[in-house]
Image 1 (cartoon, helix red, strand yellow):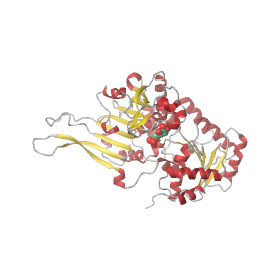
Image 2 (spheres, protein in one colour):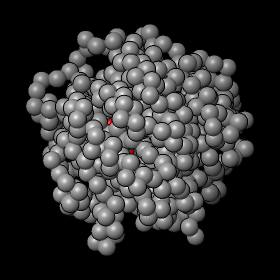
Image 3 (cartoon, protein in one colour):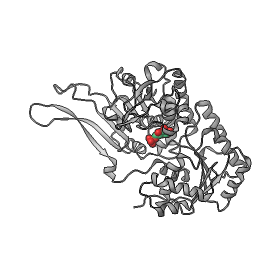
Image 4 (spheres, protein in one colour):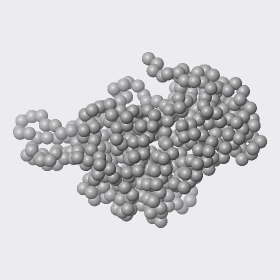
Length: 485
Ligand code: BG6
């Protein structure tokens, strides 16, 4: 059954059209939505870059790249998609270069125009102003901004101000691709479409929350960008804080309009400033090691320069409000860890009184483990009676729901969903200006506070520095064992 609603014909204008993001994510997502009939065949993709390519040259480049990123795609599907691709060679700083783009877009213009800025944030303001100067911005135009949105609060504000001089907030789509992941949207559904969780979603029943986003990959060819960002700016300020918001926010009145963004903002504003940085924040950087049995180089070897940039961060956050007072949120993320695994663990309080003799140590507190990737699942860890005679012996068991087994369908990529939301003009799964700024307001003092620190080394293929274990063990807790093994 086709459950996608067809959308209006759109001109996608991708700045950075020959870049990694365009080839790996954006073009595959558009191909798949066109193939499913969600986008009308009049849809056009105009790639903009400094590469001296004509349309035919660009189409060849894309034809060569797509099979790697769209498994199983046929040559007929690629040809059909390539026919909708155009390329405009443009240097953002050369005013004369902009006219050919204007001419292209005015020829047989589609009703919706999406400007996707898959370029560095330093260019966001200039591109928006140039688009406006040559009359390409209409009420039905939208602009999509890729992260990072600045490197601190002041630079984020500057970008927001500059883009905001051209586009209204309702036309600005700040991407955090984690919000487009099926598993992340499922987090909303698990919390709010089931009544069993809400009465327990509270400091009275919950002991603590863990959010882990572990990657097995290193920085690869992105060292230039990553070395000036680090895990704090690359992952914590956006993806991890967005996940924290979805776990901690109050029920929105609806999953539409501004409701979700309003509730997320309140969580960000309630984050307690991290004062005890020595006790509450651990940074790490990977050294050479073994990942999946293969030798992996150190971070310094990958970026080919001495560096103090953190590739791992673990910290203890608190949300200062009625619902969460006294409940720690332990966050950690890192590259070149044992395996790729993102999970949210909601750890409930132990029972108030041990009724079953001899159950100490086997009667573990309940945990709800939401695995976001890979193998999306929800597991509820319970305690059950071990079958057989000899009195009542208890032991942990889990209720397991694996989504791909339950629904028998693989999840689409986050960009497919997000790009269609841009065409629809639905900003729910995008970050609003005040959210981004609130996130920077909390993260920036931490980055400044730990600035002079040398990150602790951890071998590639492990769970990060031992100090990250101590961070949580000092509170009498431990990282969820299922998380990385
Ligand atoms: C990006 C970061 O936003 O997210 C990358 O810049 C990171 O460094 C990536 O690897 C992780 O995304 P995913 O979807 O693979 O979990």
